[in-house]
Length: 185
Image: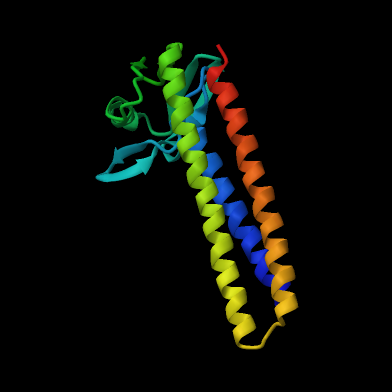
């Protein structure tokens, strides 16, 4: 019972980290990354649809994204979606594809992005700690119902704390990597 509960906590924490990584992929660095626009909502037949469902996104060179719609009639809608996204990107439409040239980031903008990353990392750590809190609450209920002993509870809490510390350090490593990418000129 304890092992399943701790395994559940581990899976939930890994999910939180995965969500954080997806979130950070949308933050612009010095080089082009399809993650920047993959989830961008595009109005398609009246419904907001993620760009990755409407087009293929490639990186022909480090400062350019190439968007090739699966259906050529969606080109204008995709272009409109990029313009209203406030990403600061100007789409260049050649009738079949859209090229997005990413201008180099200045020092001030890089520092702002690092602050955004730090904020998101803190949210990830809080999510991980909330999972730990919920699982400890669950384990204490088990102990109250005499399903586990007090010693088992202590061991489970220690194991859960080690797991939480490991996940938080993983989040910090992800953050350091992303900050390095952002500050790289």
